[in-house]
Image: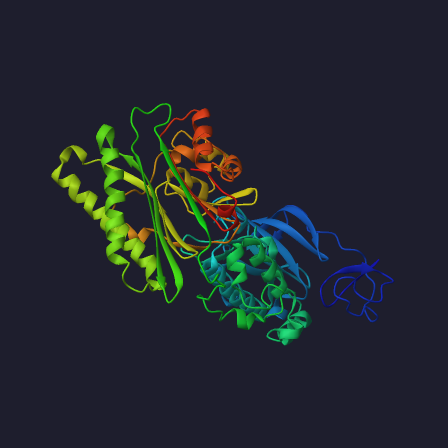
Length: 516
């Protein structure tokens, strides 16, 4: 015999006085025989068939269901009957954020089921498998999730947030991707949750789950820019949902010390070096304060014996000229203009390469990938085209800040290959975006990184990362002569392509001393 809690559905011992899950009183609850789950093959809600039993969660049975022509589904019991819930699937709030459809059907007398589609292999990449988020992306994620959680709470649902159960689309939209984490609330728990939402001192567990997710997915400087109370779970969801996307980050009064290493090498297989690099730094004083800027770029040319070399050189030269016109040194810099100026300069360089190809037909197939970063004091703006990359190296870890525009990256995001298979795929060198390209800027994203004393940043061509694992790159990227060590290791691993590396060391990393 058992007692089933009328509040949360938890199955308790027959002599229990209070629910082990929610603490509700069981004094007036009669004991009953233990229930058996639905059998495989039983029909649920007239259109679903039970294909397997998953077990219990909180005293509620879970199943995998099937419906002809519509794939498989996950179902979990709700407490009460279908009429108790008084809401249809179309009324479940913020359904666009759910990467699975929602349906509520009766699966047994006096018992309804919440039915959601099981994940397919083609869902978005979870946050746990992506790079750390910068300040703007982290704030956008916090705002969106807070509003989604509020909407779900209003509708009587809770979703368990973890870096593995939340994803971002390429456009930055939030998606909840694991249907097993969506839980129905009993009417009394629903009422209790709604009464506590928005109260700073009594914020429910959902705010703490959101705080833990943000702490696990944000860059260190981005986390420091969040308002007090957010990461402790004390800030109400309603306040988080209106969080400004732009926030002033704590910034040192003067630029951190900076050391730059830059090297390029032909490699062991190619007959010529078609990579190019650019390093320009300058300082200016205004009202007794130093202001620093820097432009760093790696270009990997493509297009035959001569075309690749011409393309990478043209790209570097025109990029520097265009950015100099967009952000002239003699003017006071408005940082808000930097991302657009960076994109406009890449677009201008792309147009210049197209014009060059028109006047020289033998160069009609030339193109180049690009990794570029623009430094303003201690803030680094970066982007890429193709499979040239920007890395953040800190401690013993290395994170790819940019996303490749390549065939294998597309296959990875579609769930057709793993990250390990990317490195051995026979088409791993096919890029899906390069300079020049029509309307190039519209397809790029500019990231922002606040440099801290323990940071190193690396820009590189695919000739480096295709030869070395990310773990090996992180290890060698912190060596005193990092650029040379990385190139030597890539050549030792085969040196199958040209290799170009720029390493930026800031703060304590620079003061420790790095060689060129």
